[in-house]
Length: 556
Image 1: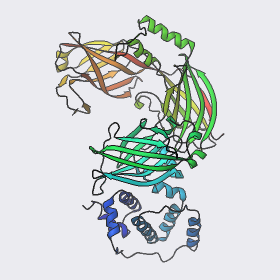
Image 2: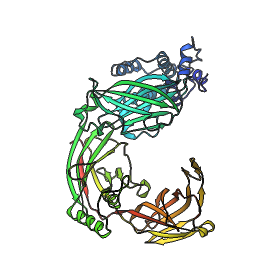
Image 3: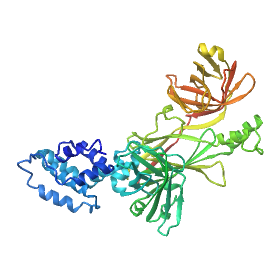
């Protein structure tokens, strides 16, 4: 079966494609067995007449030889790749003199060469830090593959450092054409071993998803090997798939990853600054760790004595006593305690000129503050024993430059609290007209009622729903200072209770209050009741009465 892009190969060989078109085609051929076979089978390509410039700069040869002396030894590639290098050389010579000089300057730069040759640079959805690591030489070519059930899994490239690893894969059909595939549960596992075969981590903690044309597997190494000195110089990785494109099979690809170079550049900046908020939350910024793909800030949150007493008072006033829960259920006390422990922060990082270069935000929706910037994937958060209220978080950003004076400025603190919202809705009225409710300064406008009567997944409007239930479109203006609501429930006139999920979009109105648009999905409701009582039990409040700035000198 001929690939749809095969006709572009002759134009490529004749130098008729632009530089960007050529790069895109090269990347396509790297993952297309059909095009590779066509290039291999051609005995001879008849090139068009090349318009070679009449003159080249006098020092052209000297510059080429000097550049070649400083380039790394190339890794052997398939024959088609050797041919493409030859074509690129011919194409470079075929341009006008000035253009040749510009192209030459780019092509001989080791950093630039690394940048354009890495597959990861072409993939949307991969964060800036990982691409920066690839640009700086921390990408490793793998190109190992395994075929089963007519499907070929190809591990093309990895980018790895002591924080994380990204594995770039292709999934190809029997004709060598790239196919997209959705991954469920344990369809793919990542296994990490040392040179002695001792398993360091196997399965869990990874994120796997289609990113454009490629399948990208991410694993946070930092979660199971937090000390870079514990990471072996050579990490043996296994990609084990048991289902691809709905077909069960057995795909196992194992390969070594060199970690020595990335380990050698890990650096730490001690900070050790502490602050207590007016709400009784203790904050401590311990240090910054920098690896090739990220700069991570280690930040602790803890309860003061005042915060502990405040929570105990709330629990007592509401009669929430921690006891033995029913089997398979969580008590109201345990539920509320879990919310009280979830402390969120928002802060910005500025350079010495006051320019914001990065931002972190634990808000449920980034649109609330719009300050999150230059963050990277897979940051870690966990409780530390014996104090169960102390949480240590490592927030990751695209790497900051060495010897740079930065400042961390605290923006917001988020705490959960009990909510008292409750509203009775006449369903008959709702079917014909909008119903507006104002409860505890939460303005909720409901604009319809419909039933989904099948169990199958179905897209209705802008959202996808699973199972049977009732759909109620709504808009809301949350109370001043509230940025999120949770634990919604609905109860019909007979007292039967139903769980409620929401599909929502968040933003801020001109008055600064958070506005929400979406649908309430009352799961399991399969009939039209006379009335519905809607309520939510938990809300998240944002506090801005904070005054904490922390200087950081990177590379110190």
